[in-house]
Length: 151
Image (cartoon, rainbow, N blue to C red):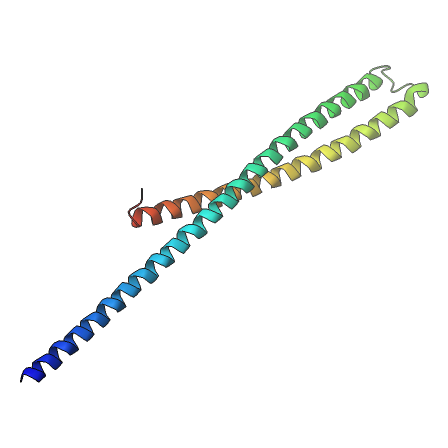
């Protein structure tokens, strides 16, 4: 009976050691998976933050350029108006060619302003999407860190 008891105790020890190794291995694998997820979220957060900052700088530059183009447009409009105000019957013939050139430049500038304004709005929408992605990644990272007990 003594050898039977030893065999049972040995089997119990082997099984319990195997169970401990299996559970410990699963925990290690889960910790590695969580660490990889934290790294992935941090990398995404860094990428979106960098993209959002560049995007905001681009928007500011675009807004400044649009303001400058708007000032040019206002100046051209004032010149067109001044030609049209010279005579109640219309632009004098000796000034008509200059008027027409200024008028065409005004129309071209207005078209350019409208296109750039449309592009700026599209860029602002893209920036909003990047910022929303950044915020989502930040929330996910915070939730994961809280789940891991890291605050």
